[in-house]
Image (tube, rainbow, N blue to C red):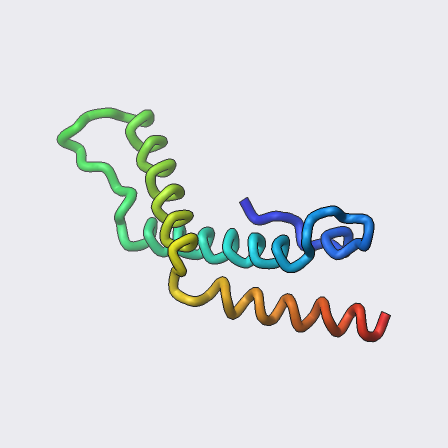
Length: 98
């Protein structure tokens, strides 16, 4: 889910706003982090009482992914904003020196 952070993301011919791409990449990274934290907390664990087998496990992983994305979209834990600020600073340094 993490979008590419290559130099092409900042290319002048790119019609999409570079800051919007940075913000999306930062939010995707935070969502990935949150997904792993939710999994570690056991929130995607299925109870054996349902007996849904492997299909139930797969659906649970989709639910965990959706929850992580929604948490990140709602502001998350502030990680995305910190990542965005760092990426934006690096992008500005690249353009100022390049």
